[in-house]
Length: 121
Image (cartoon, rainbow, N blue to C red; front, side, top):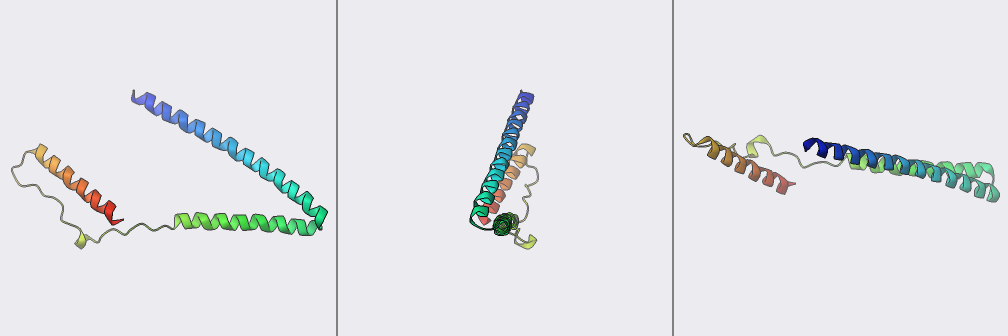
């Protein structure tokens, strides 16, 4: 049963990747045809030098925008962790408590700590 779930996820990821690759190829072919059409239209209206400059600057601007967007996505800062002295002390169960009760209380403490961290973001 576990293997079927993994196999299904792998097959779904492979289909998604294949579809993404076909979409990227179609996008690039469309971009090539649009570039050729822009070249033809600009050479009719102006010189080939002007057409090359305009298309080159258009791709340069697009690349700069994409690089800026990628760097902005990577530079998002996460909330800093609280210093050690600001953190509550770790839970220490009382002596003589049954192990199951200790595990339960430890889990409750871990859950509330996670909730506090989530609220702090």
